[in-house]
Length: 255
Length: 248
Image 1: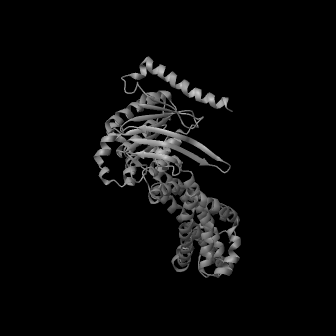
Image 2: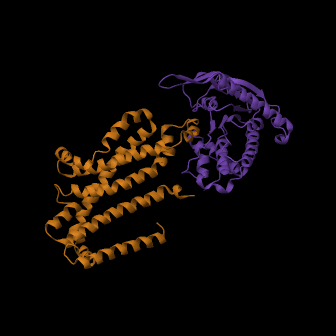
Image 3: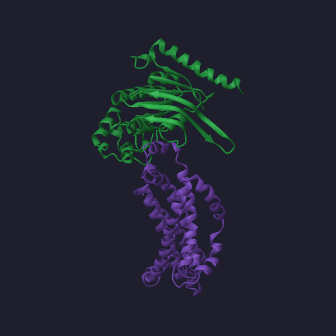
């Protein structure tokens, strides 16, 4: 479970203090997924980094399974936008790196990695380097790397945004399959409304105007079969878009 | 280096030797002896007269290089990784970098004497700046995002250094050493014309003063071969250590 209680993050520049997010409250239940969506500059990534334990100075509390977030204590899988694969390591070594850092020899089981790679359709690519892979394959390696850790929480920063539309939808299904299997509490940031609707049980709309949450939606469409083709999906997408637009307009009006 | 590449290198060497031979024929003066005579002379006197000088030169370059790496690498890592350190150190490096180090030779000789230490310090000074700047830039070019997954797993600085910083800066580091070594060899020549009776610089200048052009040329060939040897060694290390760069 991820609990975010009254979290604010301020960045100090030379001239003044800039509030990236303000008074965010959010609970992601065990094994749930939560999409964070909002216009650019609304602090989506800041919120994610906060949960990842990457920001030392924040106000409020971030709890993972009831304990204050600490990269040394919990296993936090973080998947950045650029996948974060190291170009000088082969696919297998990239996947192993997380376990190596976590010093979890029990996880360094070859079979676990092998099985994951098979599930992700990258079993033949173990000895290749990231530059030798397509974007979709790199994405699969990045997923293998985080899931191999069996993390307490999984955080993804605009996970599938660099892929073409068809590959993206495919990867969303790949992700859902893995997530169902491993049951990891997941928070991801996206700027695609459809992605939020397809992958998020909970959808959080962040406001660039207030730096806080403008709405939390319990997504009724999550997990539906072939939901992407249904009219409700389009309707809900439109509703979400309008919500985000309204926030934009608020900024313009106040300038 | 592949087999086909080696053939091209041999062809280039043959071509250069031919140009030299042609120049010797056309000029027909003792100042440009034929390569055949030089090679003959070289095989005659290498073990007896030149080997000891080449070893001295290699030792000075090796010691200067090691020292430069020992100082430059940690400094570069510090400046690339820690912004606060960089803000403090960058101006220092940038202000001293353009000073022509060879102009400091008189000062070094006054401080360290005309012996080994001033020569090694000179080579150290020439290589160290290139190493610092290359390592710093190599580390700076790592996207922050790449480090996030490791930080969020509680990576220590040791992990970050060995898994990311070192391999990421290695190609730039090696290139810097290669570029700096070319300058270092020329500077070595210059420093060896003072205060020593050993080293390729001394040998070449001494042969020149004795108007023994064959020996002088033999010395030049050996000094060039030392440069080539160092270059090739660095190339091999680079291809071995950074082979991931050549994948595509």
